[in-house]
Image 1 (spheres, protein in one colour):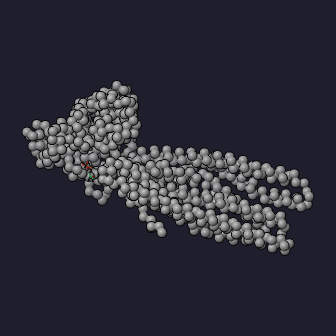
Image 2 (cartoon, rainbow, N blue to C red; image 1 turned 180 degrees about the vertical axis):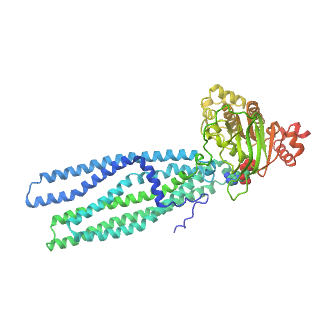
Image 3 (spheres, rainbow, N blue to C red; image 1 turned 180 degrees about the horizontal axis):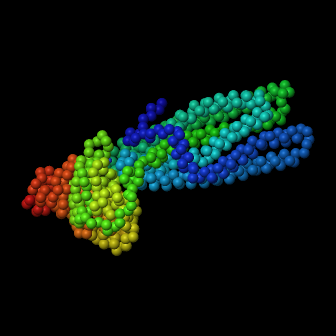
Length: 606
Ligand SMILES: Nc1ncnc2c1ncn2[C@@H]1O[C@H](COP(=O)(O)OP(=O)(O)OP(=O)(O)O)[C@@H](O)[C@H]1O
């Protein structure tokens, strides 16, 4: 017996969208190709028409045989109908198959575009692996639902109604017998379909959760191995696979029942038609050829009924996938955020202030229920020089950076760049002024060259080597077999080297503002000196703001901002704060313990 379904633990369950919304979503993917879809439908209808006429023409041939009439016309027509049916089927399959691939391509491209424009906070609660599963695997499920299934459903319905009308034309009593069975089959199928959709959606959700967990575990593989948790994680990940398989097996069983009921219903209908028909022929109420033609229609019913069953199954799984794909579509992009777009681009060189960035009484909370992450922060970043932001964990340092990059927007207060409110700046303009080095994952997939020129694709090799020289990586890179063309992976370089590559990338940008979230990991003396050199160079011509975790960075800063619980507790130079602020002294003492051999005299003598 299978366990009752519980949604994947580390994931929000997909909200159950109303069917209307899911259908709209699927239709949005099909709509740009509606002409091809209409051609497919028309071809399908032609094929259905050819099939519907075939038994009548067959009857004509048989009737002709009985009375010895010329068979040339009806036999030719029969041959034409059969060939036309085959050709139409072939063209339709190629057309709809191609369309399905185009739709998947459009869906994937659209999803990737949307994901990369999504606000970082929107993505925060979802794992990357789960998103990957939606783009790669869930999209496969909409291919049939948006193409051949629509055509099949329409053809199935038209074929069914058409056959029934022609059966009515042949014999009403036999039609009544057939209809009884069809209604029975329809009711049973209608009962099964919602259960099928539910099982398919649950199976897909488990696969999404598997993707999410596997991606996270592979990312933290060293931690997993060090904790000897491989078996535990394997069980956890396989658990998702097992539950997905369980739900899929349930779906397969429901599908098998649907097919059995359909096939059985048709067989039952044929037996009843044969019985009732034979009785009526014997009674002289109908001819044998009419019974044969009716039976042909009964056999033919198999096709529309099967088409309907198949297309309903595919549409159900497409709708289940649509709910998961729709969730990505519903994520807020940066462009959707209020104030994300500016009225007009701010011209370069318009700056007149000595302050490049200014926060005025900025307040921000991540959710209405949570405590403020920033609670009235005001600070100025001079156009030149180095500002270090320090403070205990959770003080709000990263939140300040997120606001400066407009990943987040303050609920109250104002941020100004070059004396102009952020609202005046387009996202692109704002970010073109800022180079950013993040703490944990500063490398992007690709070669070293791509990484260094990432924010400045026009940079020459000389620019790249100069930046590498500043962060003291040039010799290391020259020693690599493929030099700048070395593919980077998380294991190609050490943590300190990765940070230095990221810093070199920021230097290649030569932006007016450098935001550097220092790695908390202990860097060796060389790395530390290289980072310090990079900061010094950049601070000579522009503004550098660091979230400082190293004593050397803090001491060298021109201005230190001490944050505590979302407020600015103190601002000053290292010496000023050391003399005036107890919390700062504690922080510095902690940094000194963390980097004992780097503690300069200034600290010990202050
Ligand atoms: N995405 C988020 N959702 C909800 N709360 C958050 C989020 N990010 C940060 N917070 C909360 O906001 C507060 C400030 O966090 P922030 O990351 O800015 O601190 P920090 O000074 O950078 O800390 P650390 O030095 O540990 O990185 C903390 O209480 C934190 O728990």
